[in-house]
Length: 239
Ligand SMILES: Nc1ncnc2c1ncn2[C@@H]1O[C@H](COP(=O)(O)OP(=O)(O)OP(=O)(O)O)[C@@H](O)[C@H]1O
Ligand SMILES: [Mg+2]
Image 1: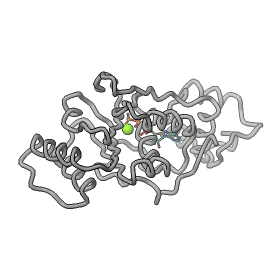
Image 2: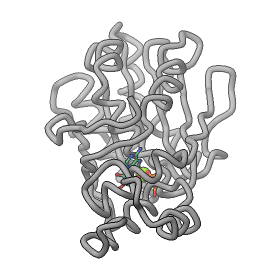
Image 3: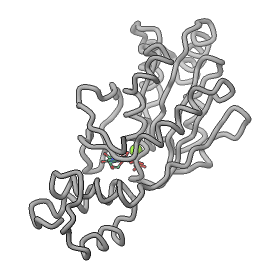
Image 4: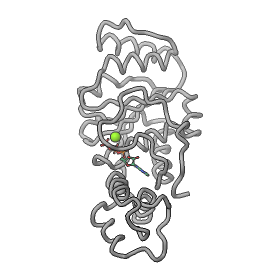
C-alpha cells in the first residue's frame, strides 16, 4: 500500500490551535505513509526508546504523519487508547496545553494549577503513579526550553516530538531522532496529480514538461506538491 485515504472522522482530536497557513487541516489523500509508519512504530514500540524526535523542513509532512499515527489501530492498541496530540508551535500556551494533557490522561477536569511548573510537577506525579501506557505527541516544538516543560519521565510514557530544528531534541540514550524523508518520485507525482486533477495516478500521456516542472519546482516536498497541484486545478487535462 503506497497511499491511503483517511476519513475525516478518523482524524485525531487535535485540541490545540488551528494552523496559520493556508493549508487544509485535513487532507483527504496521503502517500508514502507505509514505510514511515513502519519506521516510527519500530521506535515507538521499542522498550528502550522513550522520546522520538521527528524532524524535517517545513511542509515536509510532520504534522500529517503525527496525526495519522494517532489514528493507527496498532498504535491506539499499544497505548490502550491513551494517545494525546498537542500542537505546540512557536509561542504556546503551556498552561493550557498541560491542563488539557491532564484532562486527557486523568479524564477529569483540572484548571487550578498555580503555574506551568506546578502543572508539570503534578502531571509528572500522576504519570509516575499510574500504570497505563501513554503516548504524548508534541507537534511543532520550537525550543528546548518549551520542550522541557512538556516532557515527563516514566517508563510507560512515551513522547513523540515533531520539529523543524533537530537541536531541540535532547540527546540521551532513550531518545531517537527520525529524519522524515521527502517523498519519492512516484508518490510525489501521485500527490501532485491528486490536487491538480483529483486522480491519484498520472496518465501515460501526461505532458513530460509538466512532470519535469513538478520535479524541479517541488521535489518531494508534500506542501509544495499540494500547492502547485491545487494552483493548476482545472487548468489542464494533462496535469
Ligand atoms: N504523506 C503525505 N501525503 C499527502 N499529503 C501530505 C503528506 N504529508 C504532508 N502532506 C500535506 O502537505 C502539507 C504539509 O504537511 P505538514 O503540515 O504535515 O508539514 P509539516 O512538516 O508539519 O510543516 P511545518 O513544519 O510547517 O509544520 C499538508 O497540507 C499535508 O496535508
Ligand atoms: Mg507541522
